[in-house]
Length: 168
Image (tube, rainbow, N blue to C red; front, side):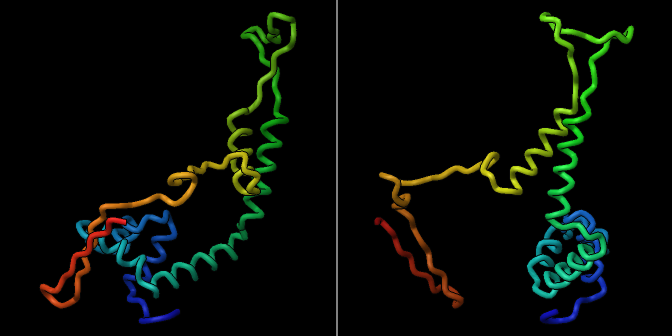
């Protein structure tokens, strides 16, 4: 771990952060003030020694539970196959199988579970089936031109600032 050692409260923050990945709630559970927990949580996540500790805890947990992307993908595939094979006949209240207007037997299956698992698989294997991308380009596919922007350079010395107008 780089940098300063963690305080006991910072270490507790790291442990709490793993529970739900919510820095504000982790700060509260670690004993920071509720009023400042949002800011403290943000500040803690920026600190390199805290980032290192969180990464260390993530790695330890991953080794302990043995869950990685291969496991998740495998389980999603099994879930999809299970949802698709659990086809059940549609029955009336009397237990008779329902047919459509053409006399075909009707069946049901977990279409929501099948669709969700297939979506997860599609995103993971990068087949592009569920890619959500919006491209922004300028004229003739080139870069977007930005004009009329005022940029203010501020020096660390008080009262020392320069303004530059970009009209490109």
